[in-house]
Length: 623
Ligand SMILES: NC(=O)c1ccc[n+]([C@@H]2O[C@H](COP(=O)([O-])OP(=O)(O)OC[C@H]3O[C@@H](n4cnc5c(N)ncnc54)[C@H](O)[C@@H]3O)[C@@H](O)[C@H]2O)c1
Ligand SMILES: C[C@@H](O)[C@H](N)C(=O)O
Image (cartoon, rainbow, N blue to C red; front, top):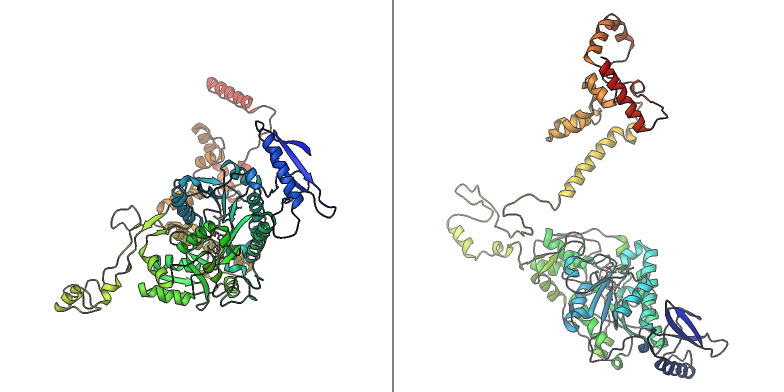
């Protein structure tokens, strides 16, 4: 037994060497300085007994071992983890930490868990700044999962008992940032596993349909089959499944994992996955009536509405241990193609236009994923049952409030919109039996004709327009897309500058330019600009040819001459002027060398100006 000290806390390290070929098992127990020694001794003997009795590698009993180290290290696990973590009895509410909580799923899960366990028992964490609505809805804490010490501190200080690990880089973003995905999805997971094991937490890590690959059965994909994914996201998720199960069997970690399908959320935007189109289509349909899909129309993938996904997560976390015959389950709800989703949406919105512009990276990923999930084990073991199929999903997306975000669902304040099933009012225009239409027809109007005596009025029915701002009714100024207009102007200007000064010009500069290709003139452009102030302020202001000599002296800091001096000079030099005019440059062709006057002095600035002032004063007194 050796006694060490760490950060002011005495630490007792107990090492038991079992056999030369086995690594040393160590258990660290930290005592607060005020702690008594008896419970420690009791625990030590308990741990020692357990360590001596358990046989490493049997795979049945959790082992008491150091996770990463032979000697002293903060990253250690005991099978008796509840000794220095807060034990969670079934009657208490769990204290939950959600990592990566500001993504598509975290905020919704926090809401559900807070309803169940109380607001202060669920802490959201992320590396991003939460929008104020999230910040004020319950505890939020900054946590980078790559910072092990910080994570550990959060778990200890907040007496966390459940950890829901949502931080990850999703499939498409992961392929574009492999090194970061490897670090967040794999190194981050190692931190989470160690902390959860060390502190006896119940750990939930979501996996995905992306944990399967092209060699897995695709329709349906069972829980247990070949898993050879071709994305860093998929590889990291298989790694998470296997490591979690390994920690469960080896160290008794209460690891629970669900393989989610693509999740369709109501009020949060997806974070860069292959299934994102199925969320985006709703937002674009409502916003513009158009959607461009980045997957082929017949790409079939398993999908789930967010409410089902979050409920499944809570259910599996609450499931009694004995009901779980496995630690990683598929869960399924529906399976559809973009074409089928579009058709279902068009039942609500017949005008919706869907076009396809395939993103080949996403398409290749989707083609390697399951088309349908077999989730019979989840249904059998803990009673999983989904509520939403495609028609209900589409209905609910139109009937519930949709939070529309500007560009990033979390970085901007959310605006709440109420959508009717028929936002374009087409049900009215398509229904010939409506009273209004009948009355108009009786007065001589027919479809396609304008209203009014000479049919000069509107030819279309009134459509619902969303007023999603605080401006007065009828305000036409749009600020939302101003930046796009500015961007267009700027691009145009750049293009003009390029054509004037750019490569093309240089390459052909020896060739004579035709009259009409004279190039871009900023002066001409700004003269014609509606904003005359631009011409006055920027273009004319830079044109020195129109400036008087006095102005130029001011601009270049040249000392001005008195009226008397000027007069004398004019008289004396009248005769020379003619000759000089022919040889010296025109006043507009400035010789900057002659204007620039460099003075070298050993004086300090203050001394120099004091001397100059004294000279000026003396000159004035003399004259
Ligand atoms: N959304 C889906 O369709 C879906 C499907 C299957 C599985 N999943 C899994 O569910 C989990 C949550 O998914 P999501 O859609 O909310 O993801 P998301 O991409 O929307 O959110 C992930 C969050 O992780 C955070 N994060 C990134 N790096 C971090 C770091 N170093 N430390 C802490 N946080 C960090 C991000 O800021 C982000 O808020 C992920 O593990 C994902 O793989 C999601
Ligand atoms: C399927 C899931 O893991 C995620 N939505 C992705 O597409 O990457």
